[in-house]
Amino acid sequence: MAEHCWPVSVPYATIYAYSSVAACADLAFALIPLTFFGSVWWNVRERLVIALLMGLGVFAAAAVIKLTLMYMYGATGDMLWDFVDLNTRSILEGQLGIVTACVPRLKSLF
Image (cartoon, rainbow, N blue to C red; front, side):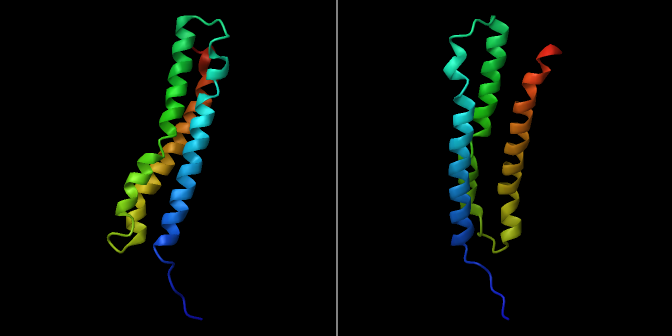
């Protein structure tokens, strides 16, 4: 059985589809606190922390940055090497999402 590689268009389409869905979901989840932000009476420090967390969520939603790296994917002919920047950005987004999710539990420490 002869093996063959996928054309470059398949990973491109997959990355574009995943990045757009992930960016929309991250942005939606980051903006959910705006629905109750004005109705809750918090002091200035708590509002600032919530705004910072929302900002981290919006930063994690910046999957558009990954899309700007797409022009380099497949340029050298070595797909694995070309995927390093995209993969690094994806891992950074995931780790930042975990940090953002864990920060509210640290409120009692501060």
